[in-house]
Image 1 (cartoon, helix red, strand yellow):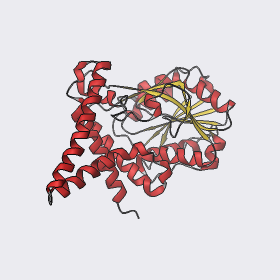
Image 2 (image 1 turned 135 degrees about the vertical axis):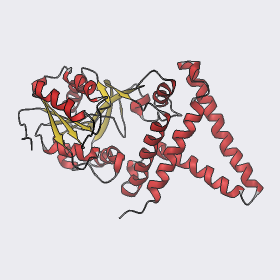
Image 3 (image 1 turned 180 degrees about the horizontal axis):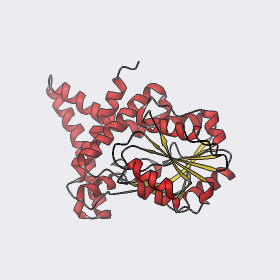
Image 4 (image 1 turned 90 degrees about the vertical axis):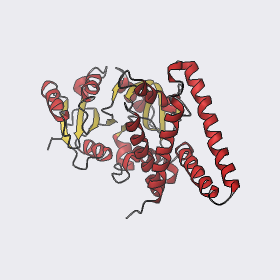
Length: 333
């Protein structure tokens, strides 16, 4: 077990699990930070990768003493955060993602905000969503994150101004705040950040978004991968409703409402002609909204996306909505 490193001022925690395609880019961007490298304790908490992730991190660790590899037996990202916190005494903690890269001033900006604003419990910035490759579907998956009708409702995806928000990506915290609110919950899946941010707000702190803090994230490359991701995210939101309803925003429940409207109207249609009319209204309203969003996106980003976005909208929305329903009705022990 690695010893606690008291000389560092910022602990950078990067959860990984089979991230061989992304971990080098992530670590390179962290090493390129303007914040002094000798003050950073960069911990990669690996959940048992079976690809070359661990080998890559070990090579970086051999070249850069500020990087070390930790084991995360629980595998989930919340556990990785908790492992990293327990292995460092640094007064600032930043949870980063291996799928992302970070602008050179990222850490410096985060620490400056936390140092000058004791009322901030978590700070972060805007995140540009990038395609993994040049294929049309990979580019469309990335574009979804920038469209409000897609999955771009969160301020960090579409916002451009500083604001108090409910969540930020790749958050930065002071250790005293983390000690006050406790560890991340390891039993609620991917919604651990929503729940943690809710706890921070309940403790009287502000979650702050600042557009000067910038990162880039690589979206899923295929249609199926995007749907699987949205289903998993939806399940996590459904689970979270059992834990803390205040951690779930209305935007998280819109896909569930759409799926329920489709299912209920389809069931009613089996017994009455009015049900077919209701189903037509629900489906027609969604189709119209999807076409409008498609046209708006094409006017801004190019007509190569014409036709592909509406069915992609439908698939990810239904995947998220069904996932939320599954998480909501699942029996909890």
